[in-house]
Length: 283
Image 1 (cartoon, rainbow, N blue to C red):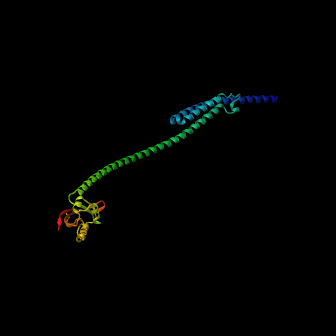
Image 2: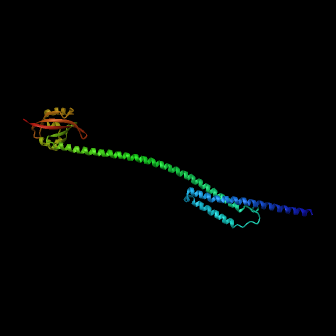
Image 3: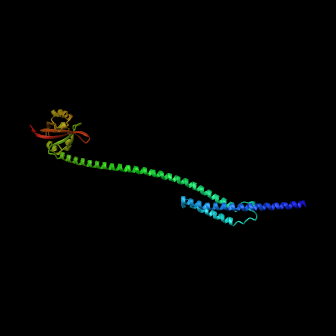
């Protein structure tokens, strides 16, 4: 009799425990459903936030994968047969599995946001440095352009001066070569002739090659050669310097010549320009 009572009591306690477990499981089911709904809504809202922040080109693939994963998880859990006993006894509830899946997706989105945020910060720094570099290059380009303009203006001025000097050189050369008075330029170092005009060729009878082979001392008698070289060594900075010398022609005849001289630089050599005005043949 006592054994029967004990068996009845154990059955009653067993049924009471199962009933309590079922009631606990039902209350937990409502809380899990609420939590699953909140997390399920968080996934698409978080995904839209990522799309608005980073664009579909960067995170669109992940959002599509997340929604496909949610859909696949829904499909798997909806086709899973319901347990005959409380889930707390046989294993995890589907809601817990769904919550874990959504949590993993949210963690993945958070990691993706961190990665793209760091990349965006790096891009901003890179653009800032690039912009600063472009500003510096633009400033340097403006300076180079300004310097180039100044150089072009200076070059134009130099070209104009060179053209003017060339024209003056041609004009004075023409005046020298076609002057009716005999003229020549003597090298102050060697005493040789650097340039001789046509009038000198006619007056002295030497041609150009013959004049180039002479020295200034060859135009005077032997007795006056030393004095001529000594006079050549004296500076002559004024065109008022006038000397009268005896000169010898090619045919050996002597003529009086009034020499007006002026020192100058001919090319890169020190020279003396001389104008020889004939005073007549000496007997």
